[in-house]
Image (cartoon, rainbow, N blue to C red; front, top):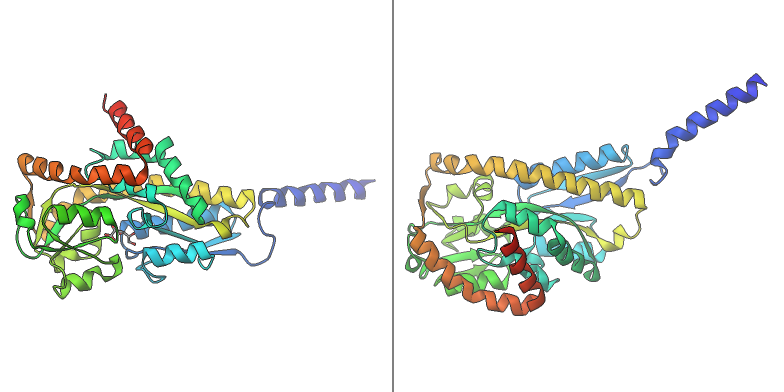
Length: 337
Ligand code: KDG
């Protein structure tokens, strides 16, 4: 009788050990996940990718392992997006701006001066509107899990301080491969040149382009201060990143595995936003100490830029659908009350 009881107790103990991992592939080998990104390992994007990988391994008991692969080693954003759609790569994080060719509603986040601050951005991106836009990706073979913060974008160039709109005339300015950015900077008088992020440093170094626009964090981590003399503070648009999964691959995961990735993505979002904001606060002083000449557009000139750039808004509203545009404007009015 004692032997039977001991056997039953041992069997129950073994079952309880297996239970938490019941939803995971029981193969000996862990499920490997290639997570591609474009900035370098030392950047805010790289630190958050590492954090995400640690969260996944911990939550899955080692049954799921993320290989975070940075510096566009798996290709620029647009190439990785196609690899996810085809099922050749499992995950990535990249700019929403480079997704517009796949899901037109992503252009909403390109709207100049859409958000006045990060609080508004978080509320809209993590709220119903941001989630609705993210859900549109699924019909194109991508699953969005969370928005990270790239940040408010500012201008750098090697020619002159940008103190008024006319200073942009003729500046060869690299922009992301995205029509709103292209139209916006053409409207401001610059010679806008679309290039993948992975080609940007060498384009600046060889004077193929005179300038670019990115958040302080990226200007610092990508060492643009080595090839750019002037930094002009415009905060002309808030730029999100988005964590993406191949839908082909996602649909083959268990519910437990999907939950691990979704929970880790949200935890990494909160980590990344705090890490990015902490770093941005210090980055401006760092860039000054590295020799950049920094100026801030006057309120009057910023107002002229805003007025000129709102001309592209009509095109964005038409492109994403007026219902979504008006819903967003109404939500911003509500948030600002
Ligand atoms: O992979 C890098 C891009 O996701 C991101 O940095 C986009 O801000 C961007 C830029 O300027 O290309």
